[in-house]
Image (cartoon, rainbow, N blue to C red; front, side, top):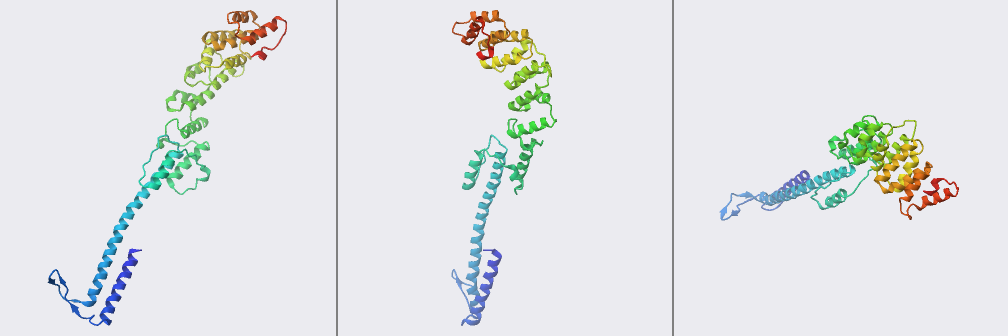
Length: 341
């Protein structure tokens, strides 16, 4: 009930009742002295005495309503605070923050808050750009711009380098030319490892051998290594690396037996035979898993005596595929070595 309307209605009722008693009730115009704790109060009109309890009831009801209105106000204030906290929780969830814990005062928001704080939420930003809440709208617009390849300022959000939004924004900065690959690699501590590996993969497409050897230890991946080997085997956009440097690069990615053979095939497309052979000789000394690739290289280069030496130094049950290839060669059967790996 609205307080103003209630007050007007209450006073109208008191006036009507007082007037009715005064005008139509016998003795309503008289006076009476009411004793109060043994003391007779001054005489008061009867009509007034009838209105006084109504006035006291009005005052009491106003006090009652005011009390519960204050209680309701405190409760609504708790809901307002929890609503704002839930908005903050949604913002943090949209930003993929790792550490999220918001405390809520009300039971319903406590339940929703716990769910949001322990969930990953990926908003469909294009459908939420017209959302009414300004705080959420600002975050959604930022996310949408980053997703669309724009560069935005994320410093005020205090997100860690490995945050997906930060990584994508850094990638946007890199693609837009705001940052060069080497600038990123020099300031590696400011960026996530996965992003650095992606940048290094682009970096090796054009960098010279000296710069590649400078940065490879921290950022090398198998994809980047294949790019380097392709360049080392190509005349166009080629790269000069010594056998020892190639060995360092290959060992850094811990290849499997099959991958060693794959790298030998790639180097066979353009690297000098003596360089290729030296690489796999050194690799076989560092890792037994590289020995099959060394054997493959020797057979591929028709260095049968070297292949025989490697097989003679190994156990009879090892490298049966290469022993079979050797036996066929001795029988003047010429097959492609690739069929045996």
